[in-house]
Image (cartoon, rainbow, N blue to C red):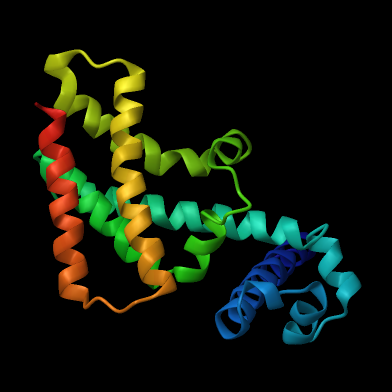
Length: 199
């Protein structure tokens, strides 16, 4: 390996270490505790070196958001590919979304944080559009006989998303309902909305 390749590889490793350290800090102490100083301490670098890779904390948050959307899209695609029927694909994708929210809780929080406007995010980060596209393509397929407009499809997507995101948010704040009941609520909501697509 040439010296240029080695330098590039080391730079990418450092960049990944910064992101991993950021996520570790958040898992241990919460988002409010994340700072450039703590990241530097965690990876045993000086703060100025962190700034060589990321201009500020917001740049790190954006990169973690991008990473989250890439992982979410991968999970949703894999879930969709396990089924042939559109109704089953929709259910599988939303269940994958649910699972992601709790297995990657910190990433989900930064992806859909209250300070982030999802529409603006999609304009600056194409990865944020992929989960939306995966679901709306299937919604369009189910609704095809009705010749739905883009607005009709968008309304149905946001109906799914608001119910599922709301249930996730409730459980992140106060997880008192057993998992089996949450899954039953989730499946009931998904199937109810899915039935409305062909009504």
